[in-house]
Image (cartoon, rainbow, N blue to C red; front, side):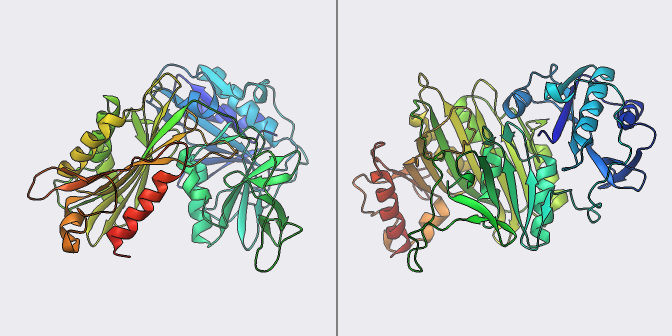
Length: 472
């Protein structure tokens, strides 16, 4: 059953429009506000929530509704308003659908999914009982135990929405894992993958054959001891606690599409002239010919690309870390996540970037050395790893096995090269010597990794290089 309903409108839903939508449940329902008024909840007469409505978000980046919902929105800019029905309430989903349908009608737009917003009529909710209101500041969850919070999401792409981001933060504060349950057919945004790979957080897929399995690892899951956890195989022993892998996860589909993945870290001196996001923009330009299209602190990315605004946000949040997502033009699928931290070394940016390519598109492998040199000479690059792998052009993560990437290159920043003893950085066990980047007196080093895409020799070369650089 759909739990989330979204209105995509040309005009901003003004207060009267919002009230008209919120009263879709009839006069017996009351309006409550939480989260510093960022979330409005439709409650029953006892103050218990039926539907939670996020503040309208102005989306100024093309392609986000298509990427995350498969929906056709109004022309950019448009307003994105989410409503989430309380799980297990008989009329809550219908109530959220009616709210979104009224909002779309009054503010000139459409509702997603279309089948959830068919009627503008008042929804009768007399006698409905719902779960108690969660603690102040805690987003509603579907199941809460002393180990995990469980939420159910029924969307085509599980994205790092503002609501889900808040759920992750709240669970982490309470020292709980977050387990997200989705139906078959759902894919994962790369922006969420890292957050769901840390135990006991999981991406839990419903499956007709095996019940539930982990969408990232394929291990079959069962609800036991207050959380979704792996099922032990019949032949498991104390020395080998093996677990079965879901049959659906093992159904690998051959593809000619590819992804180029770049992870890098920069460390900047902390001063008043620092502008963040420049490293990401530079490599994006080198590899695509244009800057990122937009950014945001959640998905959808709603703001036009602006390193200055990113810097201002990070300064406001310091010393707390800042996390952002950046996206590219729909014609060249690209997505990056950036974590900004203030440390003793300075201001660090940890960037994970990927681009998607179809069968007839060539990844810009020849541009990698130039991109690395730009980062090393202008943006205080510390290290960088580049991989190429067979995977979907649209960058969505399916709940199926995807083979590992092949390492193409590793880059060591100039400061790291300088600090390494005995000229170890230059004298490596690789067949090809590293190429210097930047000034001859203080170069960074670019290590080509000519691994065979059909096997794991690239990873073997990379592991040999890492052991050498560490002196082990």
